[in-house]
Structure formats: C-alpha cells, structure tokens
Length: 341
Image (cartoon, rainbow, N blue to C red; front, side):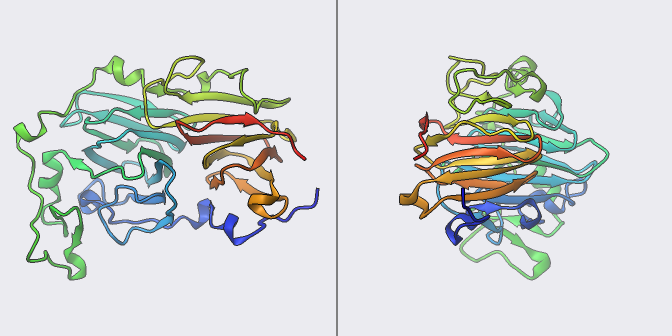
C-alpha cells in the first residue's frame, strides 16, 4: 500500500507528540505553594479546567470529553480539589499516590504505570509522585465543558502570599507578572463548612473499586479489533456486560490495546472521534477512506503520544514494536468491523 507518514495538515493537527507538549507551570492556584510548585499541567484536547487563560490547548475540537496530563518530579503534590465531572487518570510513568478527603487523610491508593483510577465527582482528591523519577500521567475529564475546580479550603489559604490569586470569575491572576485583580471581580475565599457539605468522602472499598490495574485487565474476545498478536481489553464501560473493571457512567469509555511486534489489528470503524494515548512501544495508525482523507494514510505513534483519530474512517493499527495504547471514545460511539476496499 502506498502511503505517506503524515498525509495532510488535517491529520498533523490531530497528533501531539510527547516531546511537543506545551506545559503550563502556573495553571492553578496551588502552583506556587510549597510542595506543589514544580508541577507541569497540560491541556491536550478540549478547554480543560486550567485557571490560567494562557494555558496552551493543543486540540480544540469538541470530543465529548477532555484530555489533559500532569508531569511532576518526585515529592511534588497536586493539592486537594473536587470536580463536577468524572476524572480518570492513566499512569504513563512514575509511581503515584492518590489520596482523598478534605485534608487528604480519608484513604490512599498507589498506582503504577499502566494502572487507571476513576475518581467520583464531588470528592476532594489529590495526588503525589512518590517514585524516584519524573512521573507523567494522562487525565480524562467528562464533557466538552468539565467545569471549574473546587479547592479544599486550606489550599486557598496556603496559596496566599505566593503570587497567584483565583478570582470568582474563574480566572487566575499572577501578581508576580504585574497582574492585578480587576475592579469588577473579587478573589475566591476559602469555602465555609456549609458550602462544601455536598462533598463526599468515599470508603476505601469504593475507591479501590474504581481502580483498574494494568496487570489484571482481561481480553474482551468480542472486540472487532482482536487479531493474532492483538488483544483489546475494556478498562471503563458504562455497563458490566463484559470484563471492564470500572463500570460506572463517565460519558466516555476507556479500553487498552496491546499489540505484539509485527501484529496488525483487524480493520474497524468508529462513528465518532477516538483518542489514542500511547503508553509504550511504537505503532502506526493506518486509514483507508478516500471520502474523508483523500487517500490512504498512516500516522506513526510512539510512547507518550496522543492522536485524535477522525470519525468514519476504515482504520487499523500495526505495531513495529510491542505496543500498548489506551483508547478513549464517547460512551455513545459505535465500533464495527470494517471491510477494506
């Protein structure tokens, strides 16, 4: 088959190589607080939840979910906060400790590369890189607009005097850059107890039920992608009809594909955009649909890369090395076997 590595600007704009990720080091109010002042935040797909309007967005097209990422050195902590939408973390590198409760003392769980955790809405959660090297993990947030972050009261208090001020409008002001609070806005104050009464404190059993260990995923033998050397396993689904370890409703699904070197998945199509998060190895995304792309095409992917595959293309994956990739789709997406003309 004749193909070019990047057929067009249209495909190139849907690809974000790990080395090309643009971080924001002052995305949130805690970014200057001691212990949290070395973290990097990324908004890869969608507006995300960054409070800094200067946060770079790599792909703005709505997908029904947002993809972000965090990179932190050993000992760096992301402060306790809550979301109004589902938040899922997929560990790419490093060892991460997740903790919850208003003061982070209600429970904890440690995750390794290839593990996934889904944290329920309206729960104060934080995370720390407890490994020896820089850690990186992808984050998936439900909805095209995932809303704002709600910080635990002590996080707002701790941030005082470190230069970052969060406004009631949701925008972050960086006083170290000479920015000031607009006359028509005010700074966010720590929430009162009655204002955070809706925040839940899950039991350890509830949180552990929202963890999918990469070593325990089970092949879904009904998947149309399966082929020799290719295995498709469910990580998050909205129902329990097969082997997904996390079955609560998120607005999106997560699956993991593993491919042996030289293996090729069966051809398939999806009626919505799907996002490939490459965990390890190297593989090619290949497509054949003249109506959508103009001709045959392939995109080379490596560990840490993100690719938003366009809808309604007959596509398949080929691995040049052993590879592992997480696939995120809207929960309404339909996947079907495809016939290559």
